[in-house]
Amino acid sequence: MSDRLPAALRAYRLLSAGVGPLAPLLLAERKRRGKEHPARLYERRGLARQQRPRGPLVWIHGASVGELVSVLPLIARIAERGFNVLVTTGTVTSAELAEQRLPAGIIHQFVPLDVPHFVRRFLAHWRPDLALFVESDLWPNRIVEAARRRIPMILINGRLSENSFRRWQRLPAAIVNLLQRFDLCLARSSADAERLGALGAPRVVTGGDLKLDVPAPSCDPDKLAALRRAIGARPVIAAASTHEGEESAVIDAHARLRADFPGLLTLIAPRHPERGGRVVELAASAGLNAGLRTQGGLPDANVDVYVANTVGELGLIYRLAPVVFVGGSLVRHGGQNPIEPAKLGVAILHGPHVWNFAELYAALDRNLGSECVENLDRLAARLGALLAQPEARERAAQAAQATVESLGGALERTLQSLEPYLMQLRLGRRASASANHA
View 1 (tube, rainbow, N blue to C red):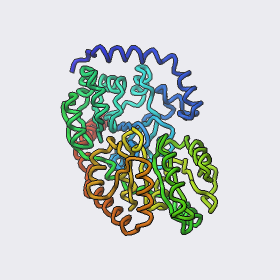
View 2 (view 1 turned 90 degrees about the horizontal axis):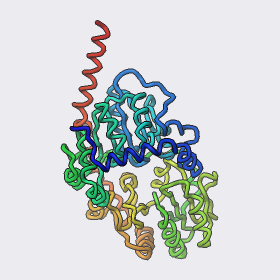
View 3 (view 1 turned 90 degrees about the vertical axis):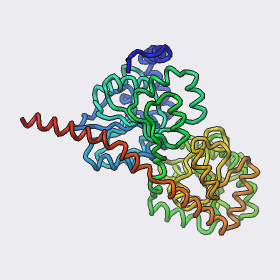
View 4 (view 1 turned 135 degrees about the horizontal axis):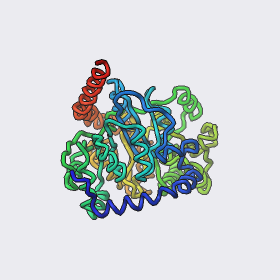
């Protein structure tokens, strides 16, 4: 395609280039707020202290924790085939998760800010042979600069919400220009595929949701045993991946239920762990005793609300609570991933705002594997009902497990779609080796 950019993209590139000199101030402020890794700020400017490995390199980029988790099995499968893999993310929590869960030998870097000079510096150092962008992180400079280096780009687990679709429709020439630079878009669902195609993606395939093929989250057995000893026979409910405004609703529900369920313990895992202290304050304002996991204590008999402000421990939460409210759904965020609790046999409640996973939640609700609660009253009522009715709770959990199992297969379909590109890298490696030998 022509390298001529539409006016909106030209304006964006000029403005973003102007951000470059201000990057130290921007990064310093983000560091102060805990949103940057203090020792790795240079990576955000496209600099690297690791050498590029020899041989073909597959670059996989996902914005944050959810995107990284969804591609962990794919990363492992690509690495098993003998390819070097570079993984980039943009958040501190995703970097912590990468350290915990990436296979040995996989390189993790923070993605550079979308400033042309930073992106060019990043690409010049790493020289990726194939770029896989996860879900919907479509930053213009990243895409334009990769295309100018003739790096094949594929969107995997492609997601485009109705809100994002409407926003991009206001800039039709810009989004067409960006999407046409992709060799292939593997959409998460038929609705995502339809929206991507309508915006101008030239080759779209519905591959399914990679999150459905991610194994159930693991946990440290010693930590799990310690928590179970501390909790004993107390009734437990949980709220996972909550956003501002939802923790207060969960805490209110706890206050309503504790008379009917003596010793009730509520576990809250905020989507952004740095908000843990704020959740403790909300509980204290409601007259409840709260404990913060990062302070090292366990939820003894005096703790009403236990705030798990840690990374990578949802596997613990889902093994401790028989019923969970999945957040980002009572507020207008679009809903968080319900697959992990479904795989671990937990009864699931969610709010009405779940457009990020609309088809999945529709299937879960239809099969009675999850239930929508529209407001605080309904949340408290359904938490109480599921606590009081173990048989109904078990039926819901089994239905959720069966639903996610029936919808799997995206990993194999994605690998099949990637195989021609991986084969091309293999052939290129062999040709290079033959030339060097000659």
